[in-house]
Image 1 (spheres, helix red, strand yellow):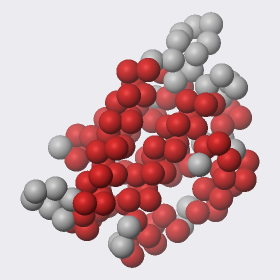
Image 2 (cartoon, helix red, strand yellow):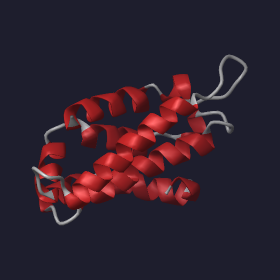
Image 3 (tube, rainbow, N blue to C red):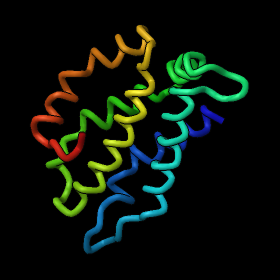
Image 4 (cartoon, helix red, strand yellow):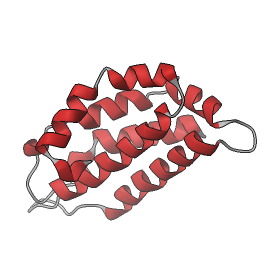
Length: 134
């Protein structure tokens, strides 16, 4: 189930410009945002408390073996100014959800912390340039 959620999350974040932009050609698709939110809240919870068959650390290790970190990097490396100003609030929400998952992904896990530490310069730029995206 985690791998399916990560695959779906990837499809959603990489296609944000198709569903997250409200312009003359289309409207933002709130159902897609709700999917991102549901997946991120689920992953965050699993990474912090685990489930009936896996501890939180085991879940974090499972996430390490998925594309989650690639999705996180993609989001923090996006330049919000590449998007219309109308899309930025939704982009900020999606980025915030992904960052929230990443926070749980690294909790008490040195291997995952090392991964995220490697992209902190991108995340710091994001905080400085777009504080509403944190």
